[in-house]
Image (cartoon, rainbow, N blue to C red; front, side, top):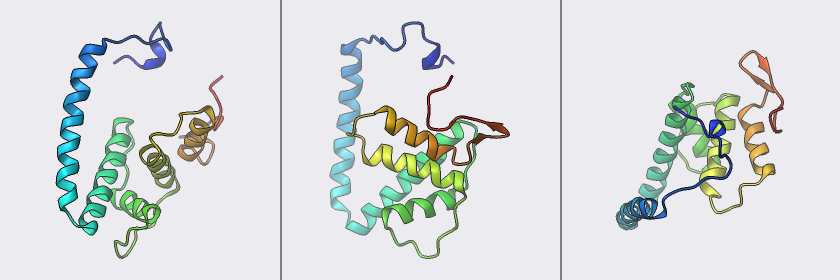
Length: 144
């Protein structure tokens, strides 16, 4: 696997617009169909579906990075942030709260510019203790 920071032409990316447009059109079509189906649901079911989708997104994204989060903690943290009543809430650990905070911002404010300040905020939310494992790290700043 190649990481973005390992590419020689970073940050000057190139792509085939025609290939990308075809894939984006297919995704947009599916998105529209899903939105149509969601419109048929009541508010409560839409809210629950959104909560479940975000819970899945947070837990699966974290698994890609090798971190397994408690699904109950993630769901509770999301419910609190979204104002969804799911009954008894499971207390969430600090790292779960940080990941959820970052994901809620990324998905809820997807049209907002991706600024250095926003990235730094995400980084600070992901590493609230200033450590990555046992290693002390600089939080909310560019790597040296």
